[in-house]
Image (cartoon, rainbow, N blue to C red; front, side):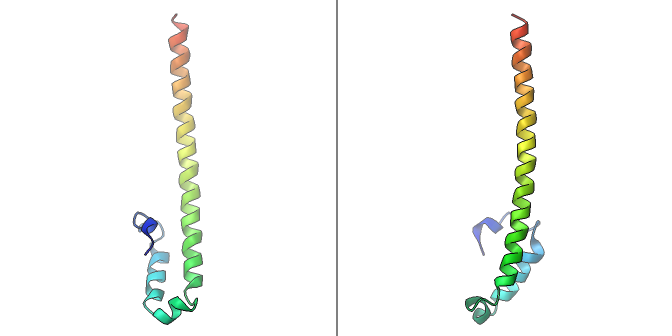
Length: 78
């Protein structure tokens, strides 16, 4: 299993389980029989990463605005 999947078990659980089940058959794993499951998992992980990045960007913007407001209030008191 990929190390980056250790914290994604809840988000893309069904895709991870499907890939793990496919990997039980070594022949399928080695000959590309699990490519569809892997692609599905990659799409799920990409979607989750994009959503997380969007949330983080919004939180950072909000935090930056609060900081800028605090600096404005500090300089107005001078």
